[in-house]
Structures are given as C-alpha cells and as structure tokens.
Length: 274
Image: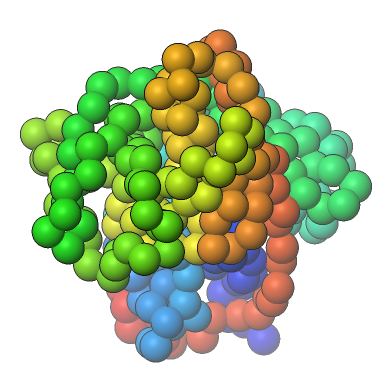
C-alpha cells in the first residue's frame, strides 16, 4: 500500500477528511479538496483538515501542530471549532502528542485545547466579538441578526418559529458589503436562560449538521441580546449537543470528537486532480 493516508472523523456530525502531512509535502489544491469532500465522487465531508507541523509552513505558533483547514468547496478558512476537536482526537490517539493539554495553531491564532478521558475535547476559542447587525433572507423572508466574529464571520438570527422548518438548502442572501468574504449564518431558538437550538448554513459548504464557531457565535449573540457578555449554555444542533462558555476576552467549546475510518487515497486518482 503506497497511497496517501487519510482518516475520516466528525464532531457532532460535522465531518472531515484528515490528511496527515507532517512535513507539508502534499499539494493540497482547491480541486483536490473539493473532490475529496464531494459525497458522490470522493469520500464526502464538510471540510479537509491537513495535519502539518507549524514549522513546515513557517507559521508562528506556540503549537507544534497546525490545523490547515479547507472548506468543502476548496476555499481556505480561518478556524473550525468542530474540526479542532477531531484534529486533537487524532493527535492524541496516534501518539503524535503525549499530553492531554497543549496548543495547536490555526489561521485564527493559537488555540489551547484539552482532551478529556471520555474522548470529548475542550477548545479555547478566543474572543467572540459582537461587530454589529445585519439581515439575511431565507426563501424570501428576512431575518435580522447579530454579527459576531469568532476568528471567522457569523450572523446569528433569533427565530420565533422552530428552526427545523427553515429551508436552508440554498444559500441565503446576505449583505456582501458587510461580509465581503462571505459569512456563516446561524438560526437559533432560545430554549431558556442556558439552552438554545441551532441550525447553520456554513460559508463555502452549505447547511451542515453542526458548526463549532457557529455555536460560540450563537451563545455570544444570545447573551448580548439578553444584555450581558458572560455566561454558559448548551447548544443543540442536528448532530448532537455542545457546551459553550462565554467570558470577557475569551470563550470555550466542549463537545465530542470521533475518528470513524482510515485508509489510503489512490495515487492515480489524486494525481488526476492536480
């Protein structure tokens, strides 16, 4: 077997192809990422996580390992909260990292992480900054929302009807002047003081079963609308449940991470996409 190693994993059913590439030798083109993530002609995933040493990319980071994250359409993204957890699970399970608490690098900055005995992972997500308001339109219906930056852009809209009735198959409209690089769109129901329910349409992907940075943005927006900037809440997404804590200057995300398969990509297939 001389193909290209891969793993498949998910965090609350936000799924990823992982490509171990410690020395940064893979030519990870947009076409290859898009093909890998395609659920008919590839393995199928919401994104690709390349596992590479920070030094191999000449990245300034306190962490040895850098999460090179790509969206399903091949575009480069700053950060992915669910992806971080799956990334951490592989590093620990494979013995690439011996500690349970360490730092990994991302395009949104370093992220301290901790893997728990039950396989769940807590990620220090950095600040969740409220940046204003805007509007998104779903199937002709406008929804006002709170703009939140969690290292990547989000717009969070509180919905009166059950979020399950929303049709998120197509890209909702948004203000490209406010979000020139696109935006992740979260739609939430407030279930109580410390619980909410969410669906998400991710930038460069479409609707996904979960979005880690999106859950952090959702809790930050809900707290902001309640007149505070600190608190903790559970977030129910189609893929499961996570716990988010927002504090002044930072936030954490805790949830499960699963590795479900591993194998090798055919080199001829890979080369044909170059």
